[in-house]
Structure formats: C-alpha cells, structure tokens
Length: 205
Image (tube, rainbow, N blue to C red; front, side, top):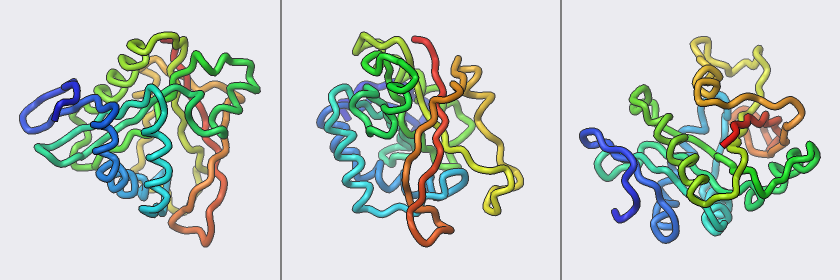
C-alpha cells in the first residue's frame, strides 16, 4: 500500500487513504459498514447497492479521506471525513440554519471497528488522522461528527452498552443543542426505512 502510514503495532496498521487508494478500498469499507452498523445503536440493515452509491458519492468529494485500519491485509476498521459542504444536504442544513459558515466545518463521517480490534487505541488514531487531514486541507474552524439518538427504552438496546460520550468529550468535542440532522435508513427491526435524529458534536480546530 502506498497510502500514508499513521500507525503500526505488530500486524495492525492504519493508513490515510485518498484518491485512487481510497477508491480501491471502497468494497472492503462497504462490507465493514454493513457488519458494524448492524449492531446497536445504528441497527442498519444495509445493502451492497446502497453502499456502492453512498460510498461513490463520498469518494468523489474533493478533500475526502478514509483512515483505514488493517490486520495484515484485512481491513478491520475505518473512519471517513471530508468538507461538510460536500456531504449530504441533510447534514449541511442544520449548520446553515444555526448560522455557521459551512465552508469552515470539516465533517468526520462514520467510524467502524470490528469488536475484535477495539480497546487498542484505534479510535484515537481515527480522530487524529481526520483532524490532521482537515488541518492539511486548511480553512476549517470546526471538526464535527454526528451520532444517532435512540430512546433509552429501545427494545434492542443491549444491557451492557457503553456510550462513547466520555471518549468524545476527552477528544474536545461537545454536543451542540439544535444542530440535529434527520437521516433515513433501514433498521433491522423495521419493515421500511425510517428517519433518525442525528445529534452533531463540534470541536474547534
């Protein structure tokens, strides 16, 4: 692989993928998203056709990056990012409505990591890589991401679920009241796609 190496410990590596390297990784990223997001809290019943369309749009955006983690040659985790202005309209609108200059917001998209490879610091590698990419691009005041909001009494919520709020707070992020997007996908327990509230968190770069 020719992409920039960000992390290496034994067989585990993480690289920043852009351009042709990013495009080549899309099939593995699609499979990883469908696997990880099927679990709580996203409960995503994904399809390869949807993934191909979604990821093709992401990869075509100027400034897109994927921080990909590998165990030897197998992708075991990934996080994506790019300029907010080049993502979906549903994510841009709440910032516009709140008066933000959307050209100055970098959007950290999904972070997906197999359960078998959690607890080894890759979450920090994902955020360091995307925030570093944003700084290299230049012109960004804010780094952002969003999380799905689920009711505490949801029947599919695991009893041992531990939210990542403390981790995100230590990274310098905080939820911003009122910056909430609505995004549609198919849940594993629903007969049809439904809308989901997505709370944005922000950090000053």
